[in-house]
Image (tube, rainbow, N blue to C red; front, side, top):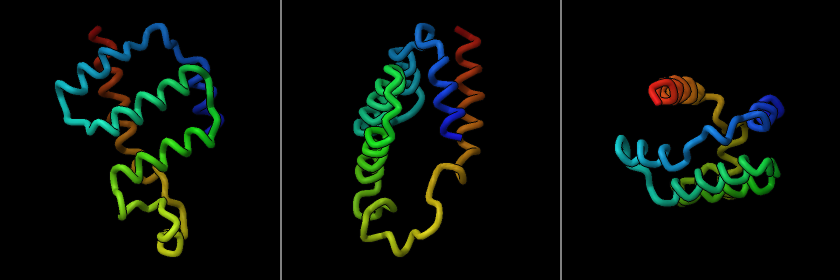
Length: 110
């Protein structure tokens, strides 16, 4: 899945991606914590620059999880025994599909 996603991002048309509009629409329709905005911007910057270094990306994810959940973060070392299996996005795929439809609808209206 990672390799497929990286291939998609390498061919993504960044010229058509409006980073400013994304945040205008986001702020207009939702509330995003500042640290989440920073996380998203840094993630996009790395991917846009074709920097798929998993150590850097993992570091962003670890920081985001810690900033959001603080002591309840599933990724903290002291929780290793409790979360032995897969803890990842696959169980939240429904959010991805919904977001993809919404983003596509917005893009088609522009």
